Every structure is written in structure tokens, then in C-alpha cells.
Image (cartoon, rainbow over all chains, first blue to last red; front, side, top):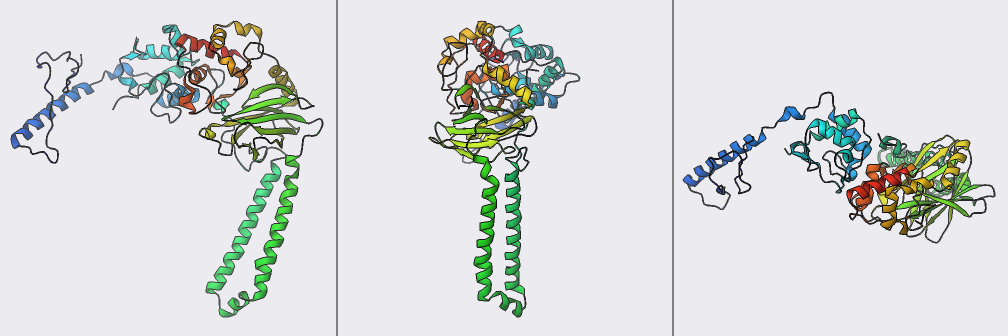
Length: 164
Length: 319
């Protein structure tokens, strides 16, 4: 389980039972114009340190599971451009078109689910990319006609799209 | 991979200029190079005269300052050169815009915001069938294109086959094209005609004569009746698509938008901007406004996923 520490008051942390709830809002002072005492400066620095630790914990990705052997993200991007996936999706790395039918794929590597329904794992994604209606009959995304290798390349490209 | 990839769809794009592929484009290329050569020559002479005036010894400069030279180089030379170039240019391009002759193949191309309506005419000039954004011609035979516009001024330009010619509302301009080799020759609207002007492309497809006759016979026929039993056909009908689009052989008989009788066999969607596959078709129907803002087709966010796919499948089946 990933440690998830929300310092601004969001959802309840899942694994940090020792944290007080709701978490205190962090007020970072010290912007020009604020008068900041030495003590509150130190407290602010400690808070920022804590926040940093939290972010680092978030940054640990289960990356090996998203590796696709033999697939090439560059080829994947070429396929994406050839098929014009951008007609429905805003895809980082594709200049035009940036469609809004199927939602942005920015940060796709960090998503838990494909189309909000299926676990975001390479073999599921590859199947999805080839024939979405086979998995989800109500979807608007049509079968793409990609072959297995092309779908794996596209998946490899999508897994380069993380939030950072 | 779907029927056609972007690579095939956009063969010949962007269109190269000064690379003529037919007898009506060659003189233009010659003329362009001739004018350029003349410009370079005149520029060289003027710069040399300037250099003499600035840096040469007094005796040279005196010769340059005489009144006779002004008459000769300042008036006589330009009149002779420009008149000669004008006559040469007019004689080179005279054949390009001749009126259609009996026996000519005639195609009417109408510029619309922002696509190309293409009507194939019989010998008497009557319309036989319509298509869009693709002009099919046989190789080795001149084709008279009758260029018109329904809204604003567009300009028809397929650089490898002919020069630019404006499409002016209320006028019919004739442009003759001919391709010497089978292939695809891209074109583009060359006169700013509104927001999506840059997304108004087309392609001329040149076939060997036999292939052309086969293509034309197929394109003139309505789509196969069995295709209209697909689930998407019902969605198409119930969604009112037929108010703007025609599919010959069905009740869809709208004339505002492109004829869709054989839309599945087109190379591109949206007038040369997207490859034509089920995905792009679905995306175009759902929200063409995100792709080509301001185009006359409204977005159709009312269709659910299944209906959208069914419609796209149906349209793609219309080969």
C-alpha cells in the first residue's frame, strides 16, 4: 500500500493510522510582505520537510508491472499519429488533433483503471487497445484493427505518460 | 490496421510546387523559373550600376550619369522586357483556362466552407453523381474542371497539375488539368476563406484509363442495398443525418453536406485532415467541432457509445 499523506485536507489517508484526522492545513509563510518569526520559520521548514517526505513516498511507483518487453514507445507514437487517436483523445506528444470525446490520456501511466473499469495492466491495456467493445460493449471506442505488436507499442507509449 | 493508414491517406502531402506532373502544370513551372531568372538578372544589373555609382572612378560614373542611359535602361529596357514577359506568360497559360470542348471530361468542383463538392458531369454538362474532397481523373486526358463557389471566394490549387484559380460565387471558372502518371496529387484551398481555411484540402487521384472507368462505374452506383440493414443505418436515419447528407439508395437525400454514398472508400475525413477509419469517423461524428472548429456539422454528443460505433461502422462499410 502506498503512503498517501494529504496535507491540504482531502480524503482520509489509507495507511497512516498514527496521523491525526483531519490533517492540519499547512500554512507556508515567509512570502515577501509577511512578517515571520524565527520560530514559525523553523516550524514551516519542518512542515515542508514532512510534505516532501510524503511526496517521496507517493513517488514510489510499481514500475516493473508497466514494462512491456520488446515494445517501443516511439513506434507506438507513430501508430497513434497514423491512426489519429487524437481525434478523441488529448495525448501528450501529439500536437494535433486534441479531441475531447474520449478524454485526455495525460498521466495515463499513473491511472489505476482503464476506461474507469479495468485494471491498468499491460496485457489488459493491449487487449483494450485492439478491441474495446469486446471488453466493454457500451463503450464508444471502436475496435482499432491494430495488431498485437502495434497495440503493445501503443501501450508502451501510454506508459511513458506519467504525471511528472 | 484499419483499411487505410494515415500514410496512404496523405500520400502526396504537402504538395510540392515546381514539380509539374502534367502538361498544364509544366508551362507554369517554366514561366516561374523564367521570371525568377529574369529577376535575378535585372537585380544583378541594378546592383552593378549601384556599385559603379558608389565606388568606381569618376570616368565610369560620368558615363552612368548621362541622360541617354536613363532613356535606354530606365524606360526602354523595362518596357521591352516586361512586354515580352507578359506576352510569353499569356501565351504559355492561354490553354489552361479554355472553355470545355465537346468530348472533354467535365467535373464541377464547388468550394464550400470548408470542403469541396465534386460533381461528375456528362458530355452535355448534366450532373451524374456527387462525391467530395477527392477528384478522380484518368491519366493522359485533359479534364475540364468547372470551378464554382456557394459562399465565399476559395482558390483551387493542385500544384503538380495546374495553377491556382479562384472560385468566385456567381461565376464559373474553367481550369484544365491532366496527369501523365497514375498517382495522388494533393491540393489545398489557397485563398483565405474563413476560420477552417487551413483545414480545407483535397486530393486528385489519377487512374489508368481502365481503372478510371471501373472506379467511375462503381462511384455512380448507389451503395449495396444489404449494407443499409446494419444497425448503424437505423441510427443514421433516426438521428436526422439525412437532412444534410445523401446516401444514394436510401431516404437520406440532404444536399447541405458531402454525399456519403461511398464515404468508406474516401482517403480522408473532414476535407483532407484526418485518415479515414472507424475511430476517426466516430470521433468526427461525436465532436467534429473540436477538430475543425466552426465547420457546418454540429457535434453529436447525444449518441451513446454503441450507437456512435454502429454509425461509424455503417458509414465505413459504404465503400
